[in-house]
Image (tube, rainbow, N blue to C red):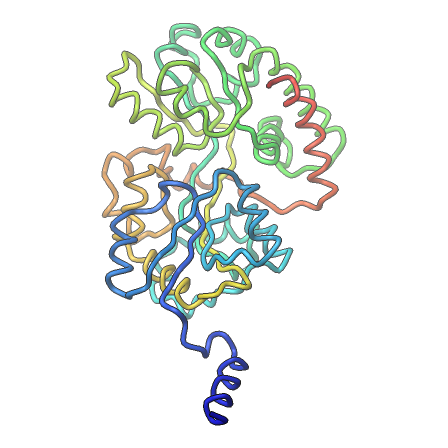
Length: 363
């Protein structure tokens, strides 16, 4: 009995990575944001049973991750959410040496992600994309004519255009940090400028936009674009692509398209990260390794129309997706995309106040 007790005591004092883990993996991700074949394949190959929970907003993920004790082994924060988690010491480092296929990741995209995750120590890219313009091409062209370029934020920010689209509906993404950065860049400023004069110009730009916008929301644009209830949406590229696919499936008499703004825009990342108190960190690392397989991450892209950073997967993605320059933009377009940067709490509060003045106009 004494020997058994000593053995138990020794096991309890061993570092977590040296103890035999239970064959379990608790994942926290967006709904329908992973390939079902990958889940089944990983479970069959490893014997590790997956519990897959979903969140519906970045705030929900933050509340679980930043307070600790979530019980999750693998989470999927955006690059800005990852930066917050790093600052709060809520995620643990991931050694690329332990990821056999890490070299498949595109260096230029890793470099852009590094503005949120210095040296790419804590997060592994999952998907990436841009914030741009989802459009009902027919409705917009009918109101503005065929000579107005669809790949310009002028459609949104110039009242002479936006006022003509008001009747068919404009929706704006409810994300102050992202939208304000895009507005600053559009005005010719550093997207992360803290200069009062620059932010004042953004305030004026949003005030001029306000009368022409139907709503400010996240996610709603997908169905509304697909049904023809809005004709212009500042949206994530994958959401607009999903709307386009749904419009085709419903045999709508119009075409939904997505365009990357020619003025430049934000490139976002969703990442894979391991909470600092994950109960099964080795299982999480094994799953990250699995998702670095080209066929596994290609399944995700083919399902949700978001690009991935795995260069070896490109050949396995549907040609209709990889040949779309607004999903897989060419190098010259990628060079003009700016990535998220972590801001101080004071800077975030300043942007939130600016946004609230704009946002409060809508229910």
